Length: 358
Image (tube, rainbow, N blue to C red):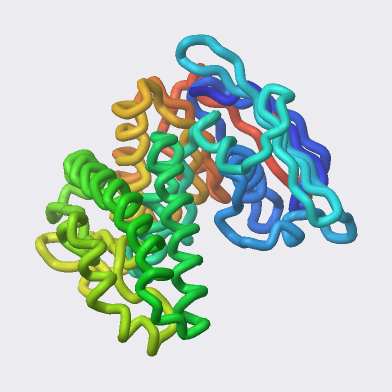
């Protein structure tokens, strides 16, 4: 998958922008707060319908405006063109894929796959389990429409059961149908997450060894209910406690993924540098996983990935990006980049929200 054109207007601090990324590396350089991250964020938003920095779309509109628009054009390995248009106007967002309006935002996922890394992604390693679940859910939802459908139905059943619990409804005949739905769809979530983590762990371990050249990295799936066949039974056994708490305390919505470095949980024992390296490797691992699952690489978006990396690790990071993948990279210090052939690199400079080719 390759982006061929990016257009956006009134998004964050960006002026009206229209540019064509290079097929290999595209460098976006500039001082802080000039629009580098916003450029990648716009691409991410169009591809996934969400920002990595906020859940409030009104924060994405340029100050003093009530709308923004984004269009990203891409081409798959098969040569099939696809474009996504994202428009936000008066607190409503609308998406179109190849000019066809999308009635459900979930239908946009997977049309143009992206893998995005930002400094905030260190929370994948040291943050709460909810962030790691979201990471797995987003990756699997882009690659597997059946997983996305199961996730949506699980969340719907969870909302219904929680609403009954809030009303202090203890009637098994009312709770049981939703518990049955949680079990059916939860089994799919657990099965696919476990397979995904196992595959990611193999890829990430190899990448971590190449880039960091130190301790081994391992990912371990930690389901809240180890055997998904027991979800119905566990929900039945915990009804009384759930009624007291007024929420569903057990199930796949409580799962986690443990990240270990040298056999120790990185969340509690890893240094800041180890945690950032692990988060970066995790993002690069999803690039390879997307190839295996979908037959093509996603577009790689790296926001300030070189910050705090020494020259050796920076060079190894670039060498770990597959030669067939397209990557857009932001940095405030382009001089820190490893030597890259001019034929493989396009360089744009951003200042005051405006883009200029170098």
